[in-house]
Image 1 (cartoon, rainbow, N blue to C red):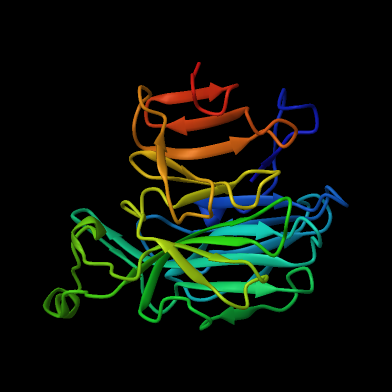
Image 2: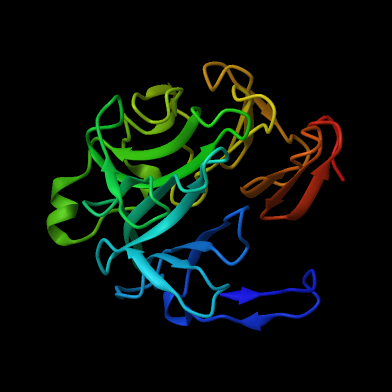
Length: 277
């Protein structure tokens, strides 16, 4: 972890070196010294330094507030815009080797805390997938905290022979009947699968919500899509720019302005995707 107090001109190392890979950072808007870090862990092997971390003193000290296993780190964390003590987080069990990736396992799951990360409950049922989970991307609508989106990898048909050998091919080639974009409109009590779009989940799995419209959602894979009805119907955007989209930031004061990070670099639009720089 690194920290800047001068708008990025200089940086100071703040620890968590052994987490190695970090999926998401969120900062409490009431107190910039309170930070949560979703740490995925070592990309190429198990380690116990992975998990969900919290600091209350600006990174001087870190506390591991949610640990699943040495193979399941945390890849995403989202903070309720109406109540920052409410947090959602996604754990992800994955095993990577030189010629394979096993994405998913018992350590993957959706978690919720209502007391600023002190205690966590695993969220199941209510319409969520019932098979083994993989990577999950999270987003809460800034304009309505009851709208929670989750892009979920759920493997419905793994290859038993491959599992016995300890080898599972790239998840692109596995049937994932329950994978897709899910939405809750009651704060996570009940979930509805909005579509099947979850392209190569281990590589993408990013979802964002318009800051003013809880039904306008963006989700990314090799291509970018948006929907004005929570994912029921969708349109592709970003034609003409590079494929493989991994980062997405929407200006909270101007939803027509957003920035995309993809394999070809960084682009931005000022007219909600009609043209890009």
